[in-house]
Image (spheres, rainbow over the protein chains, first blue to last red):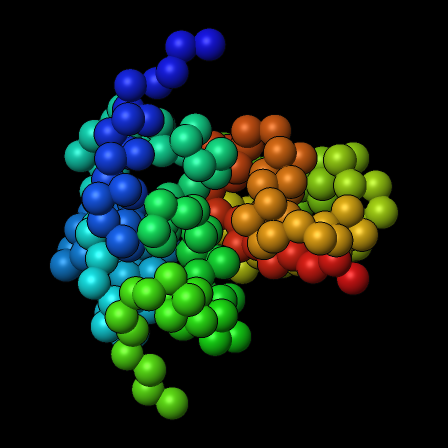
Length: 113
Length: 76
């Protein structure tokens, strides 16, 4: 099996940035409700992240789904590790696990509770 | 384009025979669903792995014919 060249690009992004969100649109102008929901959670926690617009790159759009073995966008990576899509992020946020994850990975997070 | 809830449930149960599945049609449009899946097969698996098992059961339909399926999984 030939490795998808896009995988290298993805590995680079998730290695160079602590928190990466593959999303539809940009953090300022999300183009999909599910992407917007995750952006909202990250902004609420004041987490610095890099948003990557997969709509701008069809090869990346397909490639990231194969890379993560995950069929949908958005996809959140923290310190190179796939955390989940919109459902998982929302669930982890509401149980407090998301804050714990950021803290355990040494990612600065605002805790307002 | 859209999938009916019974075929979603059937596909999940085919892959996870002991699963308890509940499907809600969120908007009544046959295109936005929420699924709650409970199966002993999820024991010891992370959430990501549990969801991947459900996506595998749907054999590539998720993200294609099936536009939106909000997932919640649990191991009993």
